[in-house]
Amino acid sequence: MSIRTSGDVAVRLKALADPVRLRLLREIGDRPGGESCVCDLLDVADVSQPTLSHHLKILRTAGLVAGDRRGTWVYYRLIPEAVIEVAELLADIATVSGVAEECR
Image (tube, rainbow, N blue to C red; front, side):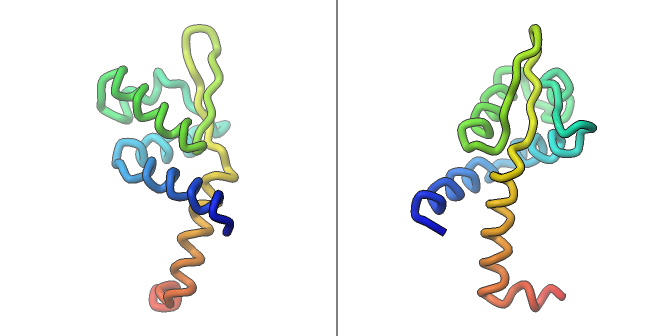
């Protein structure tokens, strides 16, 4: 992993270090078609609209989600490469440290 990539992953991990953002990421990924309208995410996050927008902005800035405006609503989708990169880093750390073997 390059230093630039390590920095990108660190930003993504920091973005995921919040329970609301983890729920949002999971909800977006679980939706049919792999995308979710911000209008549907309000109930999931149980936060105000401005707070939801703030969390989604952090996820966008970290490169974990992308959004497309359609009329008055924004639809969000996961960026699979970014999510996979974070998962692979954690899997590599678990393998190198021997944690992966302990869990089997």
